[in-house]
Amino acid sequence: MMKAKVHITLKTGVLDPQGKAISHALDSLGFDGIEDVRQGKYIEIRLAETDAETARSKVEAMCSRLLANPVIENYSIELE
Amino acid sequence: MMKAKVHITLKTGVLDPQGKAISHALDSLGFDGIEDVRQGKYIEIRLAETDAETARSKVEAMCSRLLANPVIENYSIELE
Image (cartoon, rainbow over all chains, first blue to last red):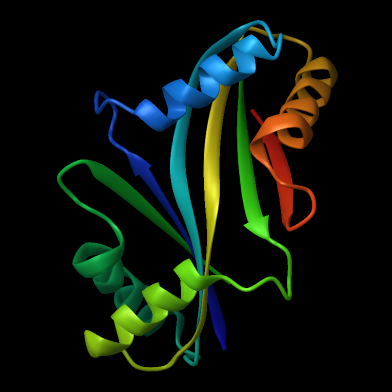
């Protein structure tokens, strides 16, 4: 069994209203010195797979077909 | 300047409908061998702070006061 940890983040330059909202909320709570906040997604997938290469190519396909929008998002995959 | 990478995940045992939805969607797309999917949040915060200890305690406070719901969520912080 393998566990894939997938990070999906907005590409640089893509507006992130959710991150901006968090940033303003932190500001109103009195936290200072916040320069930028970006929010992304974190997905853990447990796979019944023993071969790391097969697992990686499966998760790549999942990302490009369903999990991420490659027009505006980047993704990275860690396997363990 | 420091960058904090925050992962917010649901505690074990807490139902994750979003993860279940992803799991079913992957299933319908023909991906097999998926045992479990859990979705969490990933937040990057850039801080105008040079001391790692101060930065960490600030981000801890942000997590417990705003970013995470400590009743159902865990969080972890990496600084770089």
